[in-house]
Image (cartoon, rainbow, N blue to C red; front, side):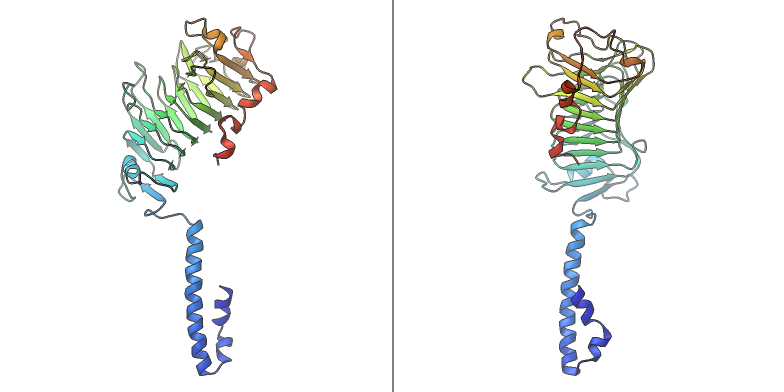
Length: 336
């Protein structure tokens, strides 16, 4: 680049005779072409890729690459080795989504402006509004919703791929809203709403600075983690989160879907919507010996531990340490 600019300077060209000037012009042209080629390559390394490469746009108005989110996912090669970003323009997208290819990012502008919604009870594994089955998935600033209601389980999102991360997203339903099913997952700055077991499954998940809101007026449960054996490295950790609800003492922190269910709340605010007992054994006293339910330095009216079930744990700093950083999900190796 610097050489080309020097040869292009008028004073340099005026100092040579005609044959030399012709040779200089030829060299100048070659250098400019080389410089242009290098600049284009360098810019391509850092610039946002176009629709033909790593960026697809979904716009219901027809101004993007696709009108539907699933169409954009289907357009990606099955053996895609590069990360693909699908930018979703604001709107309400009434469609069922299956992410079955790795390294896909779905991104909106604001969670309340870009909504993916469906209306179906949990009948089969295909029932959720969105199913994330592939690895290395990221979602940003989106709302995932299932509007079926409170008469049966209705999953907004099922996460069954490894290394999935959600930033600034909302999850809305009533029962089994977020099925954190399998794999390692990370949620930051998200909002999760429901009434019964609305975060459930056997994933290994870290929730940081998330807001959990119970819409149950009686008998609600924030979590139902499904760990079935001591050898499974799964469980849910909530760090710096906020727990609220529509009533007083209406929801427990969790109950064991699996006998070795594991859930920890740390450094989190708990409103009076949290029931004083905190946890429930789901009608099986044997679960009291195997479930791992802990609390560390939480605050708020619902955080008091003096009326918690005797088999839950008030964790020390040492006991809480494995659960309260990204190391819990191996995130130091794959999170941004």
